[in-house]
Image 1 (cartoon, rainbow, N blue to C red):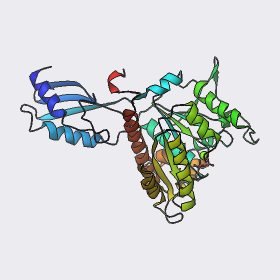
Image 2: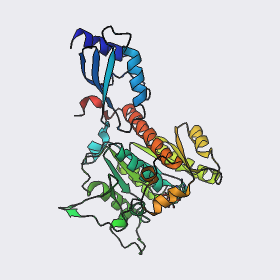
Image 3: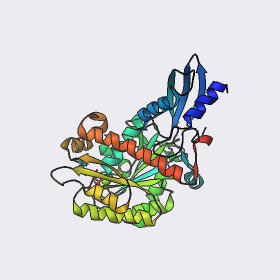
Image 4: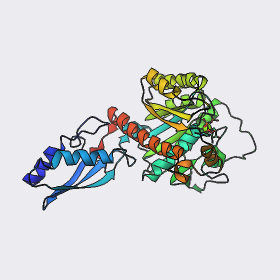
Length: 350
Ligand SMILES: Nc1ncnc2c1ncn2[C@@H]1O[C@H](COP(=O)(O)OP(=O)(O)OP(=O)(O)O)[C@@H](O)[C@H]1O
Ligand SMILES: [Mg+2]
């Protein structure tokens, strides 16, 4: 590395990653730095392709270098992303999943499946490799929400192949059973079904595995959290008090199970159910408030017709709110992972 390149590196080591609170050189986020004719070129490797902070990095790198390092007039920044790998997943599961994010709620019908679906499609749209498990085994809704109502997974060897929509790989009992007949299962069978979705499906390498849970603090969330190392859980609530108090119980259960609560989402916010309940809950539990999704008939239609609003109407208030939410969740996943000792940091990922 030349003298000048070294000086640029030193200047960049004053740039702090705002979420992770460490400088971008220590975090090994700067790669392939070269200097030529007054232009410093380098790549910033983000911890998620859905990073909300690109503009912040551009301005803080410019501030750190331009006018401070003699001989450099301009920066040319390229972007790359590598989601950190939760090493506990690799220890327990023979599948290359970098992170597992569950979506839970206390009360039913608050919008978990809607949130899980939109989260998954936005992350995939940003370039991440995303899987989605419908862990609501008895009442699977995700096939409809992704427009895959009549899907039947193919089998390859002894594994099922997930079905893909909007760039998301998905599996659901809705693909495997007669939609008009109720599924009758006891706790242990439910547990077996969720486990099979992790191990008997050929996922390929994934950055994010999103798991849509049934409501409440019952068997499914409990056995999921005990069987698989969850990177974190997103708790969805409606604004009104009955939903908030149920969400509180859900968050407390994940705390007890040592699953990090990534934060609280307030869904169906607006005149009808009010607003502010999610934020209050987040404050009370001392966890981040991840965002507010407005109550909007277009969200429901998107679910019914298999066209998630975040892709069909990305600029509508609800579509934009889901897009923001996905970025916030991805950033929280990075923070939580880099706080966990068992994470393989950026340095060793190829
Ligand atoms: N922000 C919103 N605005 C309007 N309708 C919404 C919104 N979010 C979800 N819905 C609708 O509310 C209904 C319930 O949502 P969803 O199925 O996602 O909830 P859930 O928490 O997964 O329910 P369950 O507990 O039964 O699994 C669906 O018809 C969905 O389309
Ligand atoms: Mg649901």
